[in-house]
Amino acid sequence: MGLSKLVIEVAELGVARRLSDALGEGQAPSAVAVSLFEVPASRRWTVEAYFAEPPDRTALLPLLAGLGDDLALSIEDVPDENWVAISQAALPPVAAGRFIVHGSHDRATIGLRLNAIEIDAGEAFGTAHHATTRSCLAALDLATRRGTFRRVLDLGCGSGVLAIAAARTLPLATILASDIDAEAVRVARGNARDNRAGRRIAIHTATGFAHRSLRGPARFDLVLANILAGPLIRLAPSLRAALAPAGVAILSGILAEQADEVAAAYRAQGCHLVARRIDTGWATLVVTRRGRR
Image (cartoon, rainbow, N blue to C red):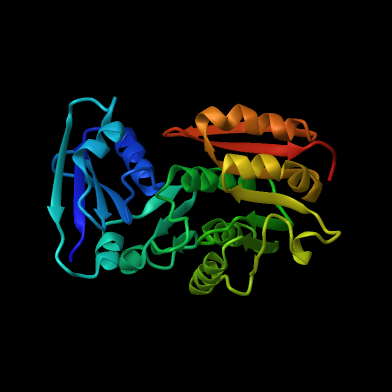
């Protein structure tokens, strides 16, 4: 049996991103793949979501509430084809700061640019089409323009895109990455290798900081943590302890309404909030540990 494809066309990019993020985050109905792209002829935006079974139109109503009447929706059957290839081919390159993240289908177009990162949609989170990854990359771009970092950790690395971006911009840094999911670690290692950064990034399976490589005496002066608000709050004491004096942490995976709670947890640990980015309902916080390097 083939898949079903939901197609929603809207006039505004912000609306399209909210829809894409909601479907991609597993909110009911849960899509197995989501893509977002512009339709140049109409200057509108299309969200395509693939489902194992036809989605109930009634179940879609909460997602569509408050988005206005200027949208078009259709549901169609997809014949038995390689739906992974179909969905990946629909994902356009994403620019975030100096970085451009693209799939293998755009390799010939993008070429071997210094800050191009090739990540195919798959079983690990992180293709830059989600607001949290975009914002982390933009924050990393700004941080590395303002200063340099010697020891970097990508905590909850998913696809490894943030660690790869750090390797691009910090050629002398020691870079570690970790994820609780062994499959994500496998994918991240493959992505690092494919992006010519395999020798630069040590990637481990770990829950929080429960790995000897992450608990050593050498602290990190940059931590990238694109996970969720709850784990970020629970990890605040450990993350602060792992930060070097004046070290920087970029925290994401946070709903906008959760940002104050996360910021308060890090403030209680002696960290200072230096920046807050909001993108389509998602927050990214940049905090620094008080003190001198």
